[in-house]
Structure formats: C-alpha cells, structure tokens
Length: 291
Image (cartoon, rainbow, N blue to C red; front, side, top):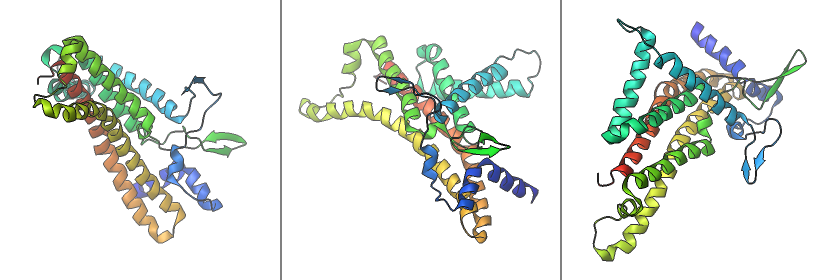
C-alpha cells in the first residue's frame, strides 16, 4: 500500500501540468508533450535549426551520463575477485562485444567498429532510460514562492523522429563509407546487383537501391515508434488519473505502472540492443558484401 501511495504522489508531482489541467478544466492532449519549444534565442544555420529545446537538453544529459557510465564502470582495474561495479562493467562490455560486435562485424573489423557500436548501444540505452525519470526539463512552468520553475516530466529524446533519424543516418553513412573503403567503389556498388538473369535487372536493381534507403528509414522509425508509443500510453494513463471519474483511478494506476515497468525493464534495453546490433550487421555486410 505504501508503494502504491508513493507512486501516486510521485506521479502527481512529476506531472503537475496534468493536475493543473484537471483543476482548470483544460483539455489534456498527450501529443502536446512533443511540441518542442525553443529555449533562449533561435540559432539557425540556413535551413538548419540549431536552437536548444528539451530534446536537445535530454541528448546533452544523455551524453554526460553515457560518459560517466564509461568512466565509472569501465575504467576499473582491480586484482582479485571483481566487485559489483566491475561486474556491471564487464557485463556491459560482454554484451557489446559478443552479442553485438562479434555477431555483426567480420573479425578484421571488430577493432575498428566495436567502439562505435558499443557507444551507440550505451548512449541509446541511457537516453531511453532517463526518458522515464521525472526531470525538471519541461516546457511547462509553475510558480513557487513567486519563482517560475519547470515542472517535472518524463520525455524521451528517442521518441522524436529527428533524433532517431540522425542516429540512423550516422550508421547509414558509415556503412557505405566503410564498404567503399574496404572494397573500392566499383566492387562495392557491384555487390548491390544480385546474380539474376539480365532481363530481371531492370526490376531488381531499383529495388536493391530502394532497400538501401529503407534501412535508414526502418532503423530510425523502429526506435522512434517504440519509444513514442510507450510514452503515449503512460501519459494517457496518467491523464486518466486526474481527468476522469475516481472509479477509474485504480485501473489507471495499475495499467500505468504495468506499462511503465514493461518499458523500463524490457523495451529500453531491447531497443538499444537492436539498434546497435543492426548497425553492426549493416556495416559488416558492407565490408564483406559476399556474406
């Protein structure tokens, strides 16, 4: 009972904007969480908007935390039995090395590309995870003793398509750059052409080219859609706590907690692993296209 009460209090104070909406009779729309507002002055380089918003803030925080994870858990040199910190670091390294790098990259390329896919896995996991921790990185404000402060809220930068597309674009570019570097331009692009009768090439070649671009889309949309759907469900159930009849309250708390636990325990790690593993596979297939 104490745990349930603590969760309710946390939810209420984590998202006071929902409570204010309930009190003021405003319409609650979970999609408003993804309407990013510019923080400070606009920074534009031609058509590219470099302005700071909460998605950028979460990415900066994710970068800092990822670096700390590497320092705290990886830079451990001890003799004798490993302690808990070293065991966690070795587990992270083992997953990145054996389950990601060695499964997708050829042996000769592991030394070059292991740092990238391992960093990608850790960074995406961290960004996904902090997206489920209530933080004062919100566009909403409330007044406390005459001072305007940001409300606590949950928001995953990876639930924004521009973020996942940028991550996918890095893998896509590295894939083709490494394929050309390893095989040469002619041999690499020739590997896109399957061994089929010449009469079918006019149909097959365009499909192969489209398939290369579809990797970029599928890689970015998979992560984006999973994180977006999870946050939308959680925010919807939180909204039901404040904006519906009191009888719906226990149902909203139960399913909201269930989805929250499912996202944190399973989806966060699986999506980070899949993104890194597919990146390794794509780069590996470009290095050795015959495989």
